[in-house]
Length: 142
Image 1 (cartoon, helix red, strand yellow):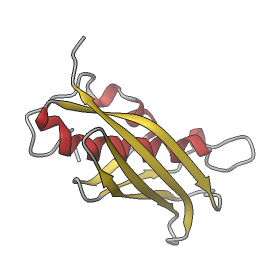
Image 2 (cartoon, one colour):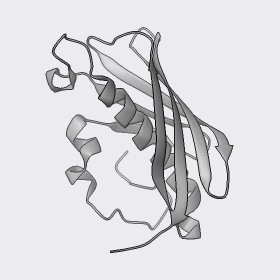
Image 3 (cartoon, rainbow, N blue to C red):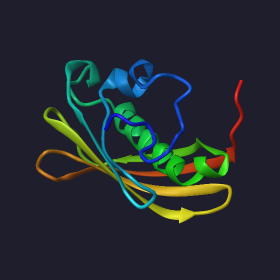
């Protein structure tokens, strides 16, 4: 997906190819207010010293997906999504292959949206569960 916000005139403040998401290889596959899907192909730089994908990669994927999907719903109203809380439970490691993520909203409020993000491996085994709370605030430019 090459557009930042499909169907929107919104342009990102920082070009996508210069963001953290680009650095670790996030590929967004679907982005709506009802579901967001992404993947990251595991590479050596994603690993912690014991050979497992670093938990921060899972948390980063979840925050990016939940923030972007919230943005689809709130940017048109002059608001911006901002990560407020990221609670990640690690269930099993990913050692190689591709990290798959699916985010679904649990609450869409005026000032916060809450998402549940499932992180799985190539065998479709659940590897992490993430609860993301996204603040919805008026958009301000620098």
